[in-house]
Length: 460
Image (cartoon, rainbow, N blue to C red; front, side, top):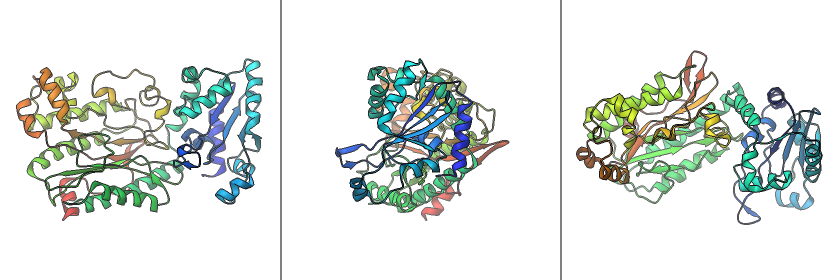
C-alpha cells in the first residue's frame, strides 16, 4: 500500500466529481479452480485498490456522498481462518490504513442499500467483469443479472477514468519498477533462445524472474516461434534454426502495477537477410511512433503514421504496391498489422479496459469498425501523466493471406505472388512503455537491446 494520505486524497477528488448518491465498490472474491479450497491466484479489483488499497478478498467499500460516510464492509477472520492462513491484521486496522474509521459487517450492507433505494437515492457502481460480482450486485440491488451491466453508472465510470488515467509520482515509480523487472525477464529469454530449447523452458525462466521479484506476471506469457498469432499462450514448440522467437511478457509488482514489453530475437546468433528486412521496417515504424508522443497529439494519428511507415517499408520490399496513404486509408496494411500501436497501462496491463474502451481509450468517441483499426485500444489525445505502450509489429498470417487472396481483396495494394514466399515467416514486434511528460515523453525503465546490432550483440 501507499501512504494513507494517497488514498484519502484520491477519494476526496472522486467525491467532487459525482454529484450525489452512493458509490459502491465491490472487491473481488476468491475463485475456485476445481473445488472451493483450491483457488486461483487472488487478484483484487484495480479500482478498489486505487481508492482503498486493501488487497484481500471478501470486502466491499462504500462512499455515501449525501451523508459524508466512507465505510468498509467485511467479515473479521475466525479461528478457522487463522489456522488456515496464519495471523492476519484485523479488518479495523486494515481500514485505518486506507484512512477509513467505519467498519461494518458485510451482512449489514443489503439493509444499508435497501434503505437508500427506498429513499430513491442513486446507487452508482461500475460495470462488473466477473460473473460472481455480477450476481453479487444483482442480489444486493435486486436487479435481474442480465441487466446489471446496462445499469452501471456512466457518471461513476467517467469520474474514475478522469482520475486513474493520470498517474501520480508514486504510481510512475511502481510502473517503472515493473518495467525493470520485465526487462530482466526479456533479457533472460533473449539469451536462452537457441536451437533445441523449448518454448516452455523459456516461459518457465521468464516466470521465475517475475516471481523472484516479489510480484508476478501482469498477464499470461506470450512466448512463441509462431509470432503471427497475436495472443499465443501455447508453449509446446521446440526452437529450430531459422526461427524467430517472440516474447510478450510483463511483470506486476506487489502493489499490482503492471509493465508490458515485447522482444523478438533470431534463434540463430544473427538474423537472416530476410529477417533483417522485416525487423528493420517494424523498428523504423516503432521509432516513428515514439517521435510523435507528446501532449495534445491524438494517439489515433500516432497509430496511422505507424501504419504508413510499415506500408512504405513493405512497398519498398515489393510486398505492397500503390499509394501508401490510400492503402492505409483502405485498411490494406492490416494484412500485416491487424492490431493497434499501443494502449494505456497502470494497475491493469490494459488500463481500465473493464470500464469500456470507448470511454477509456477514445474519450467517448465511437471506434472504427474497419478491420485492424477496430483493434486500436487507444485513440484519444495524449495528456501528461498517461502511460502508454508502443508496440507495432509485422505478421504473416497464412489463413488471412489465403482468405484475402481468394477474395482478391486489396489486390491493388498487395502483391500476393510475392507475399506467398513469406507465408512461413510468422511475425515479430518490439514493445516499450512510455510516460507522457509535460513537453514530450520518457521511456520507462533501463534500456535493453532492440535494434538489430544490439540484439545480435547480446546473442553473440
